[in-house]
Length: 225
Image 1 (cartoon, rainbow, N blue to C red):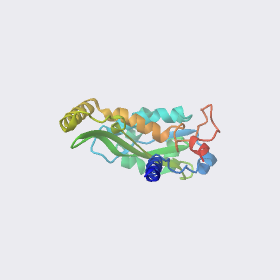
Image 2 (image 1 turned 135 degrees about the horizontal axis):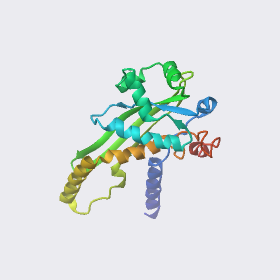
Image 3 (image 1 turned 90 degrees about the vertical axis):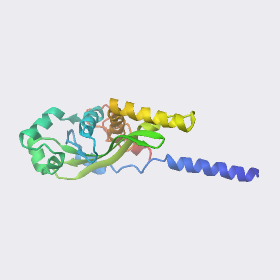
Image 4 (image 1 turned 60 degrees about the vertical axis):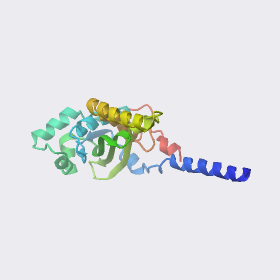
C-alpha cells in the first residue's frame, strides 16, 4: 500500500510539473543579426466584439518595449500619420507594404498585433476577464520575421475558491462580472498580457535592446536552455 501511495504521489508531481513547464525557447539568431533599434507599433487587429480593446492593448504594449531598451515611435504621431493618409482600419494598416512603412517612419522593425480575447465573460459560477494578444515583429528593411509569440492573462489566475457554496459562488461571479465590466478590468489584464508577451525579463520575450543596460546579454529563455 505504501508503495502504491508513493507511485501516486510521484504521478501527481509529474503531472503538475508538466502543466507548468515553459514552452521551448525561441531562436533569436535572426533577431540578433537584424539588431533592430527602433520599433513601430501598428494598430492591433481586433478579433473581439469589444470596441475598446485596441485602445486598451495599444496603451499597454508601449511600456514593456521601451523598458526592454528600444525606441518606440509615439502612438499619437503614428495614428495621426495613418489617418492623414486615409488609413483608419487596422487591417488596412497591416496591409501597407513594409518598404512604404520604412520610408515614411524610418523604423527598423514593425510590431503587428492581433487581439484574440478581450473582456469579461460569465459562465455558470465563474466570471473571468481574459486578454489574449499575438504579435509578430517584422524587419522593415527586408520583410524577415524577427520574433513572434502569443500571451494570455486572466483574472481567474488570482481568484480564490469560494467557501460559500453554490449560491455564494453565483453571487460572487455576478458581482465580479458587473465590477469588471464597469471598471474595464480588461485594461489591467491587458497590462499583464503585454508584459508577458514583450518584456525582456519574461520567457521568450524581446531580447534586451540597445537602450537597455543588459544589451547583448542572453535573454532569460536562452539562459534556461
